[in-house]
Length: 242
Length: 300
Image 1 (cartoon, helix red, strand yellow):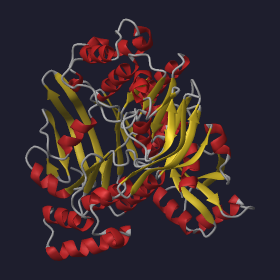
Image 2: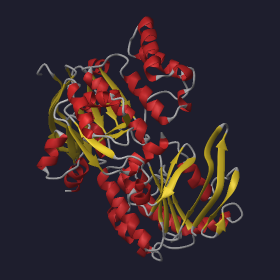
Image 3: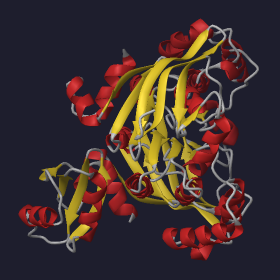
Image 4: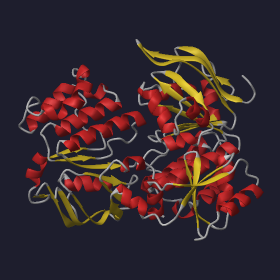
């Protein structure tokens, strides 16, 4: 694995019976990169992501994530990545403070570290007034911003975001992306899926999966040139409809 | 008038989900409720489909009062909730037959209306609904909502979490249904879909921000918007946010949408500022307003 690659996948494949969900995908993601992982519903994105985060064993192929082999060291991968999805992020029945403490503990942070991180988060996100509120009572946009920060508590090398902005209002969606930029700028790799094509434009590079294969992978600019269109939406429509 | 809502308010404990909302939907209109999660869209749908009582206000759907005539309304409206609500253990065909029977009709009788959509899932008619993909579930749910030939169709976030290709196909289906004379009230968090409606209501925190055609709503935007671009999106954003004359700074695809506080804004000054701040390959050019710009301005 090259020093500056935090993900390296070669011919990664996952079959369920006769069905090939992920069909021999090969790609690399660099340190500090914002990598967009796009595809239609059912194209194989979630299956591919599950293999990369060490919770699904590939049928064949190779991959290293955060310096560890996904076959032999999935537990080390889990310690070195952050993960956030729209469906599962935080516990609604715990307060903001309790959620931070709980996840800090899960990630093996010491009491002092948790306290320090918690104060830092409360300050940065402006959570002072709601620190003792139940997470379930917060607006979705707040929850997602908090969930993102919590997934970064243990300073992971990579953060995986599975449709983090679905249903979020347009202003909060942009504030969320500013957090993503900041994170990538500080050297953490961001691996993100989205159905918002304007967000695809925010990525350094984008891959598009169709029927289990990566059919396109490049910067948004080059993809638009390659398909002779003016937006990522058109790139997507051209590829995925095919 | 197909739908008429007057001063509807609904609270849950201390949260006012819908706050004194009024609007009308014309017969045969494709009307969009546009707003994020928690705006109150689902509550409005549930009141209009007689599944929830409002605290205050009145609502008429297809000439029936939602409280007094609730039984009649149910025969004349189709409702596709945001959450998949068909029977997972019944097959595609069984679900459709079940809903036809409940409404005292048959699949054959109204097949014309659903044909376009149903032929896409017919190859899987013996598969259980729970085993269908997201896109197919959505098509089946639409068929079930249409099988009794409703006058008004309610679709609560039919495209949330759906990829751009399937979203486009879904909206093409809606346009065809509209041509068959069905009034459609649809909600979505995707601002690009707003442009496909005849009229829209922008909604946030239980209140309507504005109601009009998408074209008119765009015209109400008070500022001239500029597309700004430079190498390194994050630095560009930081620098634009530092610029003392900025009115709004929002990432928009490959560009940043920028508006200025001053009436006599000269893009050259901004260019010089960005250049001095270290930005490379700067471009600044006027651009068209979108619904999303308008929404953010109103929601500020």
